[in-house]
Image 1 (tube, helix red, strand yellow):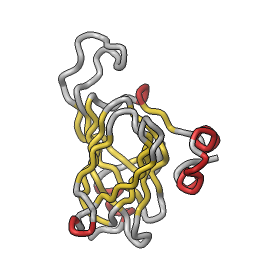
Image 2: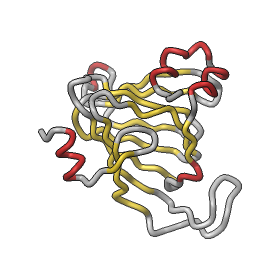
Image 3: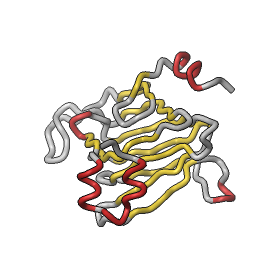
Length: 165
């Protein structure tokens, strides 16, 4: 298995605003032909990226207007935190140890606030992410700590772990 820095180089990954590294590998050539209330004109039907978190990196709490599916490739399993639109926190395990509750893919519904951490701090995690309708930074919201703490003080421990000041 490659070390994290070599894999970043080989896959030509770059830093992602939510944490970790990524590279877009697919963008549907088909776009919406008219605007909707939720999405812009000419938004791609779907997009896909490689996404990697190094050993101690986290995916910061963020939200998309689209559904997203994460596909585990290899490395450490991930602990993925969801805060749904009703304000309920759930924890999901992304990995290959299905017998112990991990799933090799995870569907993240549109509008969910979510973030993740590497479980085994000696390994990195490589996954694929597919967004439909396709990813656009205009549909991406990265949360600040004080914003989430004001709304969900009962989740302070995980909010502190998956946000910046």
